[in-house]
Image (cartoon, rainbow, N blue to C red; front, top):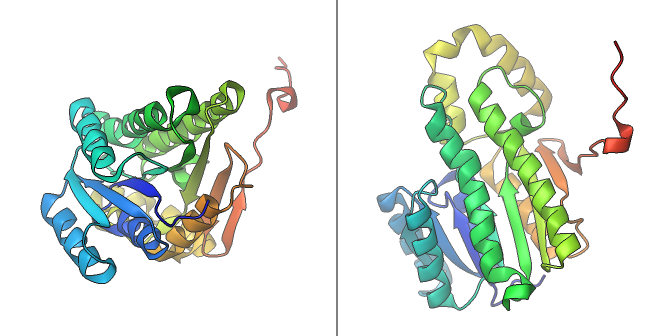
Length: 264
């Protein structure tokens, strides 16, 4: 997909990975709606992007993705301004092990809601023009991460939901490709919050081993893989890519036929 003139929407776009994704889309000619709960950071980001890429290429909508009303309103405002939607990246995420319901509401429900809202506009049976949805999960969505069990559960949900809805898109002819990115540790506010959490002291050794194995990514590293996936129409629908400092590769999941029968 060539990005010149395309319309994108990115959640959690005011900083970190989301801001890097927005920047790389703008660099390649797209118009982008930035959604985030942080109004000040979002407006500052758009002001900076206006200076670099020209006014009118980006717009900010203050939005909590756990709110159906706010999310739908942001979609409507963005598409009315830019005319349609071609790309969405459900990136917004938090770590909050104490308020686990809030974490699930943002990390999983927000992705599900954003995907369904995008499909309403994008799928061809509704008169849409097709497009690409990229959902941001995590390496924690592929295996147990004792540091943050609720975060782990929510990201597993993102992977499972995305793979299933991608298959539905293929079978029902939506014309929308859905992919998942699972970065390892990324230098963001989420990573910083884990570093400061005293309650996780006993788990620091385990995290240290993971850091040695995975390394630490910059948001721009994730953005480069994101761009590659969006541009490459041959990318497989439902594909899940793991991203570490060593590069990116697709995960091969077992099929139902591969699962052995239970033994007693």
